[in-house]
Image (cartoon, rainbow, N blue to C red; front, top):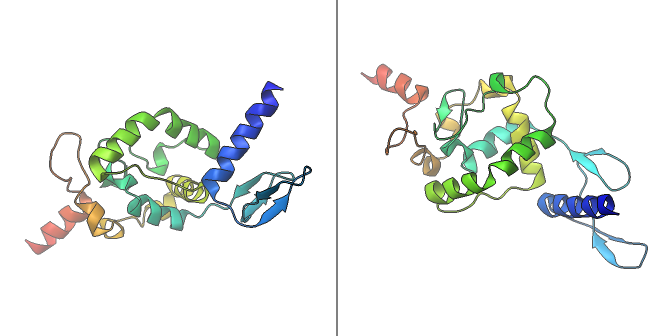
Length: 177
């Protein structure tokens, strides 16, 4: 019974995070929203979303993850670097989310401090970001030019009160000297 209640709660949270579209009737005649499925069905009611590292690259920058985390030398130093080379060879995306969940209070406080708000993700956005974090080929293409201007100025180093200058900026500065 306890397991069933936990599974229902987890399913409800997952559906809420992933967004929904469409309607379906339950056994009791109550209408529930059903997610638009873009991924692999795992039985009748669960699916794994597709994971696109190119979309994840864009989201990592535009959502502001890059403010504290770095990939390919681009980003902040206040939180762990997320280069694919530092990730386990094989990792469940659920383990990645579990790590985020354990650090949620600290991450949310940093987001509010650096960005002025908490970052919100859909399930699909998390899937794409996780794909990016684990894809060395896509990470090699990540540069400061991928980071929106409004986010660039917020990239912070753990030992400075000024935005970090990453390898892209250093290269650009040397070439202009």
